[in-house]
Image (cartoon, rainbow, N blue to C red; front, side, top):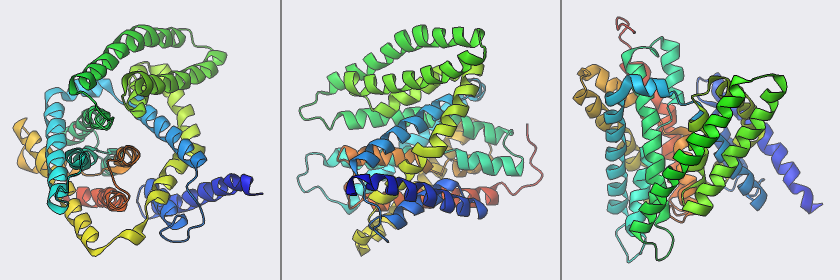
Length: 396
C-alpha cells in the first residue's frame, strides 16, 4: 500500500493548489501565491501530511522546464525591438543593483568562516534578486488601461531582457559549483552553447518549425505540439549534459527560438499551458512550499528576511528607475518603471530552487528567500496602483 502513496500525494497537491489558487484570485492576488501557500501548509511547516519524494522532485523539475519553455514562447521579440536601448539599460541596471545588494546583505549577516563557496553563495543570493516576474505587473497595468503606454512597454521589454540576463548569470554561477572548475572552460562552454543554439536551434529547428507552420493542417497541429515539447526536452538535456548550462536555460531558449513563428507559438503555447496548468506547474509550486520549513526561522533569520525584502524592493526601484531616467523618462515614470519591476514571482522561485539543488542556498536560508519572493509578488500590484494613480496620463 505504501508504494501507492504518491497517488494520494498528487491528489492532495492538485486539489489544494487549485482551491487556494482560486482563493488568491478572489482577493486579487496571483494564483501562484495560493499554490505556494498550499505547499507550506501541506509540508513540514504546518500539517506535514505530504513528503517530498524523488518522484515529486523529478516531476517538479519537469514543471520548471515547461514554465521556462512557455516564458520563452511568450517573449515578444518585436516588442524588444521597439523598446530597444531604453529596455536594455533598464534591464542591465535592474540586474546589477539587486545583484550587488543581495550579495552585500549576505556578507553583512553571514561573515566568511572559511567556506570555499562563500563568495559564490553571496553572489547567488543577489542572482535570485535579479529576477523579474512581469505577469503580475502586466495584469495590474491591463486593469488600469496602462499596458500599452510608454511605461508599460518599457517594463515589458526590460523584463524580457532582465530574464535573459538573469538566466545567463545563473548559468555562470551554478557552473562554478563543480570542483576544480576553470573560469575559461566555463565561459568557453557557455559560448559553445550559444553557438550550438545558433547553428542547430536557429538554422535547423527554426526552419523546420517554420516549414510546419507554412503547411499547417489539422493533423500537423497535433504533431507540432509533440515535436515542440521534444525539442524543449532535448535542448534542456543537451544544455545540462553537454555544456554544463542549466536545463532551464535550454528550455527558455527553445521557446525563444519558436516565439517568432506565429502559428506554432500560439498553438504550442495553448497545449503547454494545459499541460502545465493541469499537472506540472501546481506540483512545482507546491514542492517549493514543501521545501520551506518555517520552524527554523530564528530571530536573526527574520531580521535577515526583513532587510533582504527592503533591499529587494529598493534595488529594483532605484536601479530600474535610474536606468529609465538615463534613457529619457521623467522622474514620475522612472519610479513607475522601477515599481513595475519589483515582483520576483515564479522566476525567482525557479532560480532559488536551482540554487538549493547546487548547494548555493542553504536549507536555513531557503524559507527566508521564499518569503521575500512571496511578499514582493503581493506588494507589487498595491504599489503599482499607487504610483500609477494619475488618471490624466496619456497612453500610447
